[in-house]
Length: 79
Image (cartoon, rainbow, N blue to C red; front, top):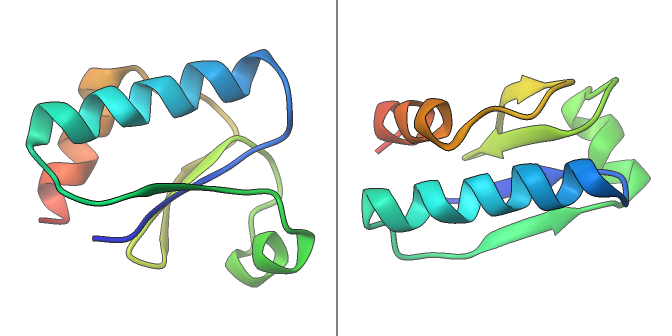
């Protein structure tokens, strides 16, 4: 599973990135969570507001930080 967190630098980063890491651990997923700040990659996904979560190349959500429980649900749908 490829998991990417698209973000700007700041407090939101810590919240979303930390929640994604907790969700990955809770689901028992082996893999990396990659932080994306490259504008070309962000444009490729069509993300217009950050933070965003991309799972297996598909934008799961953008523009807000979700709690760990919601991220777990998204990850489980994509297992």
